[in-house]
Image (cartoon, rainbow, N blue to C red; front, side, top):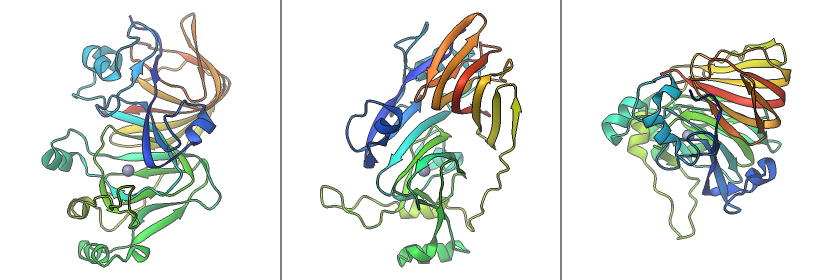
Length: 318
Ligand code: ZN
């Protein structure tokens, strides 16, 4: 039986909007000073993680998903369902929207659309995101996009460390400059760009927009999701539920001491934002520290954690 946490080697993505905070905050070895994304838990073909330890060391997470489904509670599906990233936006990201599963299947021939959520790790004072829009109908949305009335259309929201945003498919959104977030999302890379601030790239050209598909998939009118963020303390671990929805449940874990025995329903994804500690499985211990990403497989029926650390954890609801 597979009885150890599965630690993963992060994958990094250079982006025109990326910076150096992934190194400054997490001490990651980033490929350049324009590093935008750390893919911490990924089975996606555009950046699958290599397993670091245990019987599957050196294998890819997507191979483990295909060949050892018992580690994942025998969940159905061709692809590992979730993707956990840490993003560093030195500059504004383009304004974008993602399709839902049925549109992704029909139009893109992909399995998953993209519902995502963000936990704000840190940000500069006065940072903002774009979250939703002010159009009341599809016609009004189309007209405002056509006329470039971005200031009137786009809804700006200020952000602070510790904030959490749930971004269902169909929500127009953009991460503004100076923000580091942990993103938990469906494992999809389909993005429709609505507006790119009329920026030109190194080649002198503007990046491509996808206006027809954006208009197809955008929810109108925008509705702000209601989140309750209930939390409870049990022994040395405070659990805060950030969101529970169709695809995933995401928690913030604040560890100070030792937890009670935990009996997860399925496999658990863990990303360590701060501090360090141990996972205890039977009589064995596995060290974790800030910047680590690992999965507690479903074959570990119970475990405890100890130490001082803040983590974002999630599981699939499929
Ligand atoms: Zn997005």
